[in-house]
Amino acid sequence: MTDSGPILQIYSTGPMTVLGFGGREILDQLDIGACRSEIIALVKEHSTEKLAFDLTGVKLVPSGMLGLLASLRQLNVEVHVCNPSDDVREVLEVTKLDQILQVYDVEIEKGEQ
Image (cartoon, rainbow, N blue to C red; front, side, top):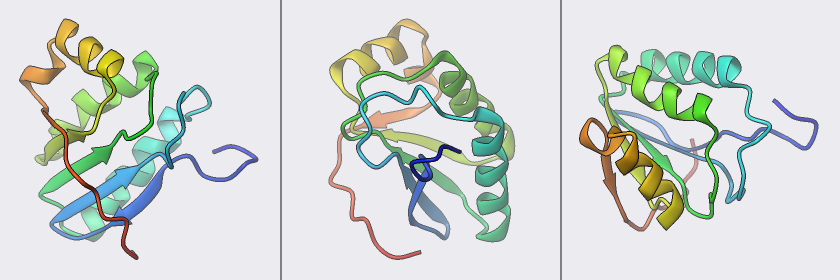
């Protein structure tokens, strides 16, 4: 996705798959198409029922990522957003995405795949 390494990081897989962004503050170089393809493959490969995104440290989410989060519901998975910053939480509220995604704070364990 970028020369500095992948932006999307896999913390755990299975019925509850947890993804994160390595604490990056701004997801400005996120390739939404590649990210979506990777997520779809993970969901299918691991029979994911719940997909959680750890936004710890993320302060700015591009609009394309918001669209991606909303569209993932079409995969028949519950989409969770964990640990959003106050600014990201406000954007989720203004866009009403907090009504279709589960948004909360939680301690995320970053285990092996």
